[in-house]
Length: 390
Image 1 (cartoon, rainbow, N blue to C red):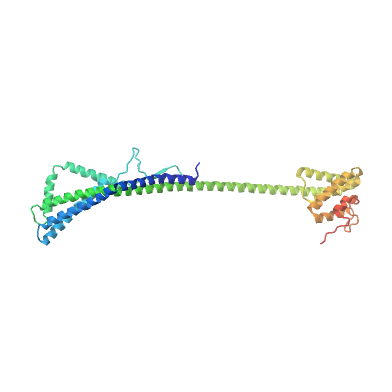
Image 2 (image 1 turned 45 degrees about the horizontal axis):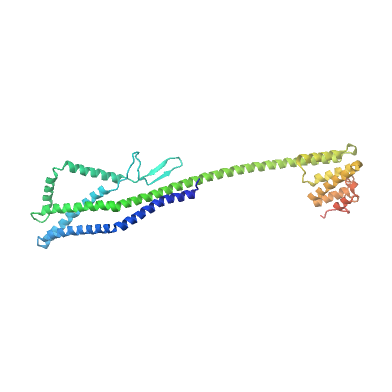
């Protein structure tokens, strides 16, 4: 699937290519037909000059300057009005039309926009002026055809009426009628050609710019919609991740609390059994409780656990000489773990239970004294009683 920048670049290329082709075609036409357009402008100027010259010659034969001015001004007014009417008619007949297909949709659509709800919005030029031009053209043609027989007599009456407004002359009406015909035809041709040559390209360029703008707007709408959807997905994913992390943290805390409670219970049971009367062999229960906890929860990071386990192994070595070596090995390993987890307090408690001359020893705290002559314990705990510096 194409990314959004690639889609936008594709749309820009799609819009730019026809525009560049059209611009190149227009430049080619201008280069080829430049002389014709220049010739057309020259002919328009010549036609205007010829009409003004005719009015001046007609007004000049009256002799006096006052009569000349009256005739010339009346002629300019009449021909100017006729030219304006002709230009208006030429404009109405020359307005470019927007083609409509059989389905009623404009073939000159300026743009489409796909909305999120699936509705396609179509934008096309306003054709009200085209419809008015079409109606007026049909009305004028229809009226002209129905009144064709009355046109000659109407022209005669019209010429008499025009002649009455000019200096008195037998041919005044005919001249005015001819000037009107000349100016109206010229105005019609000028209005039609100007509309087709100048106004039509302006409409086309405006429609093309609007179409490009609407296509870009549609792309922007899709980009915004996609960005909103992606943001919603990211937000939902972040929410789910946070909720899972929160649940996981709660589970970890609960498990840690349970393990702490279990370890606390194990330490209490070990301590209770460790100081049972010798005939009850509480040390064996302490060792069993410790090994069951290790098998169930793993080795704990608690120096008291390993200190009591080492004390139980010392009692075992003292009361069961046949397993002395095994008990010594287990006690030595536990003592190393005690020092690894709490060097200061661990050494103090090991020295208290191991050294027979420790000044702070109380009766009964001699669980590790059975190993006092072992060099491994001396190297680990130290040959002198250890008291932490406070």
